[in-house]
Amino acid sequence: MSATAPHAGPSPIRRPLAAAALLTALVSLVFGLLLAGAGPASAHAALTGSDPADGAVVDTAPKEVTLSFSEVIAVGDDSIRVLDPSGKRADTDAEPKDLSEGSTVRYGVALHSGLPDGTYTVAWQAISADSHPISGAFTFSIGAPSDTTVALPSQEAGGGPVGVVYDIARYAAYGGFVLLVGGSAFVLVCWRGGATALPMQRLVVRGWLTLTAATLVMLLLRNPYTGSGKFADAFDLAGLQSVLDTKPGAALVSRLLLLGAAALFIAVLFGTYARREDEREKKDLTFGLAVGGGVVATGIAATWAMSEHASTGIQANIAMPVDVLHLLAVAAWLGGLASLLVALYRTPDIGSAAVRRFSAVAFGSVVVLAATGIYQSWRQVGSWSALTGTRYGQLLILKVALIAVLLAVAWFSRRWTGRLTDSAVASQDASEEEPESESEPENVSADPERAAQLARQRAALTATKKKRIRDADPQRSGLRRSVLAEAAVAVVLLAVTTMLTSTEPGRTEEEAAGGTPSASAPAAGGPVNLKMPFDTGGQNGKGTVRIDIEPGRTGSNDLHVWIDGSDGKPMDVPELKLALTLESKDIGPLPVVPDRLAEGHWSASAVQIPMAGDWKIDVTVRTSDIDQVTIDKNAKIG
Image 1: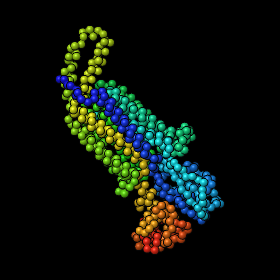
Image 2 (image 1 turned 90 degrees about the horizontal axis):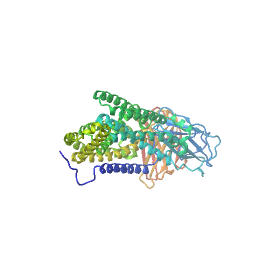
Image 3 (image 1 turned 30 degrees about the vertical axis):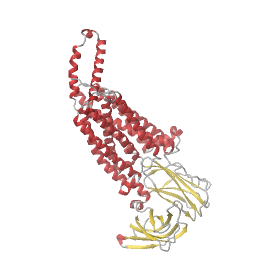
Image 4 (image 1 turned 180 degrees about the vertical axis):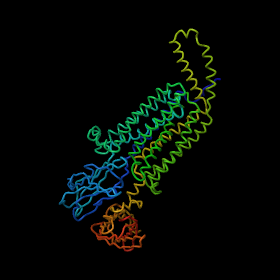
């Protein structure tokens, strides 16, 4: 049986090169656009309040400055700095004191006594529990505002050239993990013959090299990434030691150790396993490699889960194993897809059975992704408003849309898979083997070197013929095109997934902004910080009310109110009234009439909270003789 390659279109050799060039260009374009449009990584923790508050004017100098955060953070000696109007340190230059109580995360620094009047700048920098650096600055004034020579930092923590390189390494690490784990799983589960195929070996080894190099870069850059932002500090031994004492540093070191075990796994897979011919022995070795490789892959995936979003926030004990499953499913699906693409374009030997086995693996991976993804979405987003109103939610919507597109393309791939047949190649093999053996010269057996040369020539000729026949097969060509389209979508999907890991979850972003009740209801016995937008309907009637109640317990409390206009500047209003109601006990409303301290700032002392509970705080704001509005929000006090 003979077969003729199509006359039109590129040659079989040029087609894989064109496909590889297309994928390379797409990867470069996607990651280039993502990195060019991305700023410093957003963090899980956020500043939720301070005392004194941003823009506050206090009558006398406070003894200390305190900052409250939405999540646990790591601080150092200079994490919180207070600078006077001339730029000199106004704090005692000591390590911040941990004033956390319950789930309220708060740190403070003591100030020097006898500070003069003027505007003071508070600059802070810390590391969120999910490994991302956070920073910011604000001002408050003693007596009255004044000019200041202090310039607020223009670059956030994690930004600049160091941040760009660190982000590139993060993207590369995920890509290397997908190729390493997915490629290995494809060989063991779907196509064992791929262990002897050089393109498959190169794919897995390149995945290992990429992940190893990216992990080393992240480990070295971790200190400047979270600190100075200077490349020179990458080789500061003291800074490297401090990184190793942190959770992210320990995760990166653990990943490097596991990659050492992965190197041994690769050596066995493409060495001893590939050369093993006895089917029983190969079956036993397959089981051992599957178990050992699964343990190593799970451990590598856990290095992300134990140091990023899954390790902090609600239900962390459940979220971390779910995140590991999610990462392994991503690797099995997308890494297997890359392996299938390489096998279809670069090897002549993969058969329909291997393709069908991968189709089953991909289906199982999608089921796991759907289950774990739904849980992760609920945990990280929390509300419909956060799904559409935060960057994390918008990226999540884009990810879901890309998965839908990928599944649609995969449906076409499954149709082509169902039509695949190996009969053409089998017939070709049968028709060519006998003539080749008959035409062998009689004196070849006397010359072993000549016999080996002829054997290599026959093998190369056979492989070329098989490839030509497979390239001419319309079912196989259709499958290659659909898998190439899947891989193109998968590249974009992996990039968006990586972006999600460095973006502040929608739940905490809303909480930090006061968008949900949990943001306005700190743990019992802690300060209460509320943020409530209002609109009286009149001219210049829009603004925001900020309320602090300290200590936030039953008994006597100090209450501060700030009103900011729509331009963010302090806003004075003719009348401001508050009332507290504990509806569950039919207590209230208890009226509170604060005194004006400065422009946009009111205060009331000795506000009595008779008992603990979920108190409703009503705020009435009047901006003119006829324009008035009452807003409310609940807060747990006591």
